[in-house]
Length: 237
Image 1 (cartoon, rainbow, N blue to C red):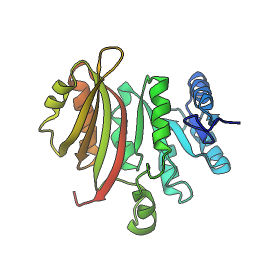
Image 2: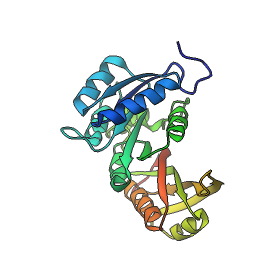
Image 3: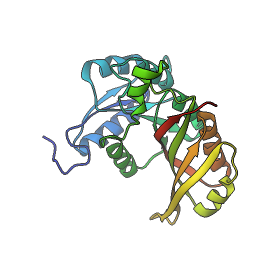
Image 4: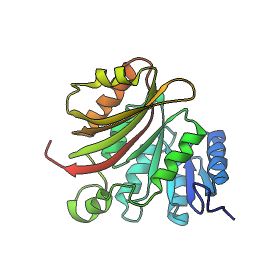
């Protein structure tokens, strides 16, 4: 029986990754915080488990053989029964370009590997809070006549967390990016002496968001930890 004081108490979480050791490690991690955890080593198995067990959240690796995470995400968003399911995509640093494609499908949460266990648990707990998933998913399914959660023609309000030696220098390097407006940001010192920066930005398209993430990496030693689409509004590109 889970302790109500645990961050993930009573939640059901599915971990999907083709690497069994990563699956097991993350499963044990979420269970240590009170969640009921399952694992799936492939996309087809994950889809079957999601429909049978109705988890509260899915942690989904992007790069997998047979059926990758992007295809799993597409099928989830096209099915009204799973269109609003919170899904956190797990991506490696060298797969950062995949985030723009996932955002086009309506994915709103991304964690970049390697990740710290503490930050992953905190991130997942935030995604499970009420109203964390953009309400646009339901609106898209019922009103817009486009794939559920598809953000292709929407301005995105995005929160990006990254770590660097000098967060202010990275922010300065991002000024003037096309189709991107930096709104607010703050810096926090980490135990390792780095700066953890949380940046809120408006991007006019998934492609513009992809350009922002690439620019952060090109700024030097900066490393993205997570990326959240927190809201979206329709506009004509």
